[in-house]
Length: 457
Ligand code: OOG
Ligand code: NI
Image (cartoon, rainbow, N blue to C red; front, top):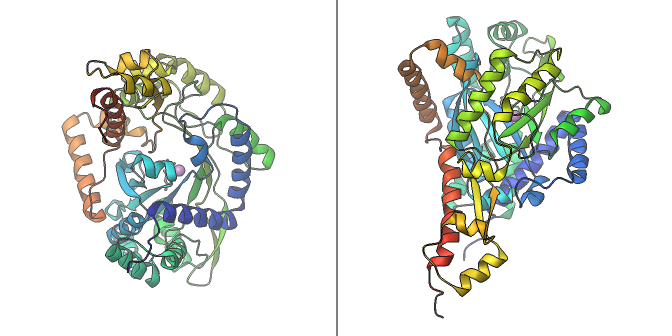
């Protein structure tokens, strides 16, 4: 007799909700932000970008963690695989002076994304980039001495791998145990002196190396209107950053717009008994739009570079109005119309038969109909495919141009990715390929409806 196994989608939803409860307890401002986002999302009359958005919107958020070693990353991949989350994309943040490289663990199939798109941006520290050899060794020893997963989480992960899943009781234990990996530990295993040295080397290195585990550093709900949430944050006592990152506000949203509030101060007790504090954990909100094709993405990158050659947002917000105006002006070159974006091959769309289309397909078979004709006749609808990934630091372009040698830049990037994938124990999926496959499948389904004979029963 076989046991009933809990679906990976259900496990992911339960895990994401446990993480959200924990972060709300640990960082109360996150709870306040969730309340604002909830009320804005319910009020927002605007139709969500994708038709199935309403159902998944409440559940939707992403988190971010930073790991210290290859073994931690490897085990994390196995854990997340049980939640239906696969590594997608490679982000090299060293180009922006941040000593990590990263991937996003997320569901990939349309069904899994519709069930719950919860994703975790996961970074791996690049120890080799710590300049001081003594500090590097200290960091290596600290990381080697910790184990970030509970024994029960590891046992249950192995059981899930062997059985192809977990029964209800094991599933609940597994997600509960796994959540513990991401909790905040106020008691740090380093002395205050070592912490200070790590902090001086790089704030992020101290955050990764000085603690017992990879505390979740933010959780980000998705909103239908980031402008309203940004405006309401100060009224609720939360101070947002000066400008919203990413593209400007548009009729037809593209990619990702994000804004955050400042890291909170958390008390720490160091190994030598010294009391101190740590700043790392914050809150963020995001608004997601359509996924861009390589052509659309190139246009986006070029326009953003153009903006930033003239003006970069000052952290104190002093030029926020001018930045915004310039961003709006430059981005007027990016078509703000779904049909234009589709016809110019700038974004990905998912196609479906309309009611009229279904009737037409049942009545006649015409293998010569093109998708464009079907759309013109109203037989097929095109809905934007949501961008499920992240935006790598735009400084990447500056890095490449500063090197002045395309080949060597490409080589550095490639070898980093190989190193990352070796640590991960798997290859990362190419996000463009995933969106293109979703689009192609929906296109073929529509076209095939007009090609195939109705099977005789
Ligand atoms: C991750 C930053 C990336 C986002 O939304 O772009 C990220 C980190 O700070 O560890 O979460
Ligand atoms: Ni984030």
